[in-house]
Length: 227
Image (cartoon, rainbow, N blue to C red; front, side):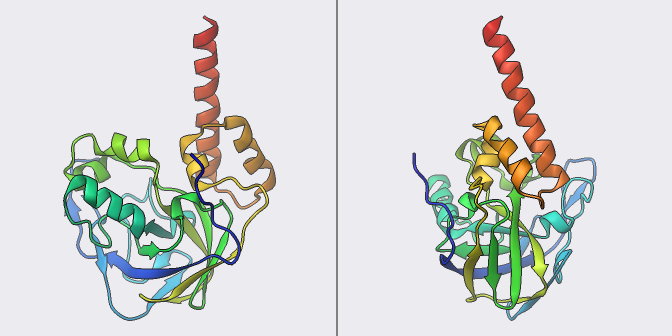
C-alpha cells in the first residue's frame, strides 16, 4: 500500500491544543499518568521541554526534548472512532496537537514544520505502552494500535513560540533520506533504517535503540529460517 508522505509545502491545521487535565492512577511502576489531556483555549507557549501546562509522570520512559510535543492526525482518530464505535475527542490519544490535513504518521524523520511562530522537528513515533492500554479500556489495544501503525509523531522544538487551535501547519523542510515515522516504527526494512542513522544527525538515543532492536529482530528471524 502506497501512503502519502509529508512533502515541502504541504499544509494542515491545528484542530486542538491539549495539555494535562488531571493525573490518573494506573497499575504501573510509577502508579500515575498524565495521559488525560484535553483541549485548552487561547495560545499556548511552546518551549524545548514541551507545552506550558503539560507534563509527564513516567519521566524514565516519556518526555524530554525529543518527545516535547506529540501530534495525532484527526483523520486517524476518526477511523478509530468509527471502528470502536465511540467518541475519541482531541487529547484521547494523549496528544498535545490534534492535526488535520497532514499524514502525521508518515512524516519524514527530521522534517520541519512551522506552526504560528513555532518551528517543530519530527523526531520519532509514539510507541504504545501498558498505560495507553489501561487508559483505552479496549481489549488488546496496544497490539491493535501497533498493527495499524498510525502512531502519530513526536516533535522536538527548534524555535520556541506559541500555538493555538486554527493555526496553519506548514512543512518547510524534508530530509532526502525519506524515512518516515511509520518506517521506523514497523522496522520493515532494517537495512534501510541504517540510512537514517547515517544521514540524519539529529536522531535521538531512543531512535538509535529502535533501529538496533529492529536489526536484532531481523537477525533472529534469519537464524530461525536457516535453522
